[in-house]
Amino acid sequence: MARSLNAQIVRVMSALTLAAFAVMITGTFGYYTFFYPWLYPDDLYSDKWNAGDFVVLGLILAISLSAAAVVAWRLAQSIVQPLKSVAAAVHSIAHGDFSARAETIRTVYGEAESLIADFNAMAMRLENAEAELKYSNSAIAHELRTPLTILRGRLQGLSDGVFTPSPELYGRLIAHVDDLARIVEDLRTLGLSNAGRLELKLDEIDLAREVESVTASIEQDLAKAGLSVEYDLGSAVVVADRARIRQALFAILDNARRYAPRSTLSIQTRRARDRAVIRCTDDGPGLPPGTGHRAFERFWRADDSRARASGGSGLGLPVVQAIARAHGGDAIVTGNEEGTGLSIEIWLPASGPA
Image (cartoon, rainbow, N blue to C red; front, side, top):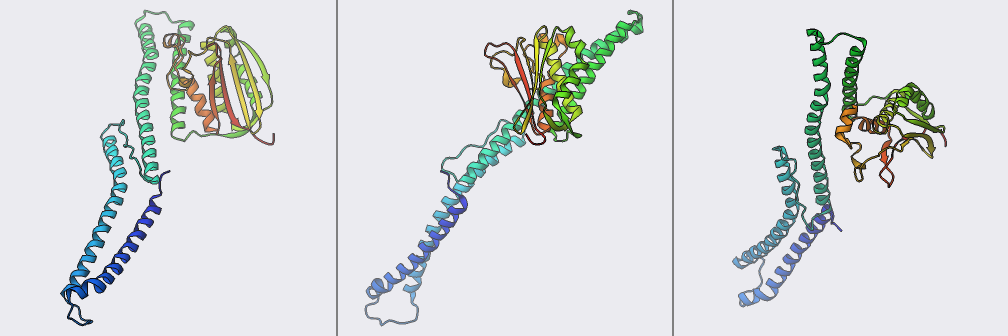
């Protein structure tokens, strides 16, 4: 078990004080009892100090100071070594090396162990944030380039008279603009969530009614994708932002429409003690084995080529998780053992008595 630095300093200082007192008493007693009569056999005891007294006092002080210096040096080393390790890692991180970690020092004090562990955890988060930022910048540029290139090409064609203006062409152009707007809004939501500034307009809502409203608004899109929706809606009242909850529901349903067409989608709402849940389960292709933990990574797709062809940006599920966590809940993704089907759950704190 790691020792407490405060307690150890108190013990060491107390031991040094007692040791110094013991050396002084023992040395003085031994000198005047044994050495003084031997050095000055013919002298009577006198209160006046002679050269021998000063020599003995100097020796006692030297021994006490030497012992104190050795103990203090050992104690200082045990304190300074972890600080040096952290300082070296800080220096490396300050110069851009986010992979630097403080070296774990054995037999250190509890406070030092906590400092090193917390610093290394912070450094790991910084490294992950830096890697995510670099990847996000590249991914954002890639996601925006395709619709912008198509828009520019179509508009240039219209300007040059290559394309004939028609409602269908304008509809496709508007669809590309909508894709861009959706990506920008998703990025804005994630940015506000990471900064802890995702504003919520809280109100008491029933998740069952919100599911009915959202699915009714995109019923035709779900039908075109061949999705058959089954409902099992129980009352689940929460205090939440209605618009944000609907945004999360739209993202989940859009995810099923894009990646699990021609499947059965089961939507449930339940209250479990002090929490409420929305569970959407499909029997589509699901996620590849071992990739469930990546479902909430930005821009991650189980199948890049198929996702890009269907227009997915890889931001839908991260937005769902961000909205759930902003409400004090969470979102999880699970799949069955056969590798088919996907279940997405949003857990939120429930309102009122169970």
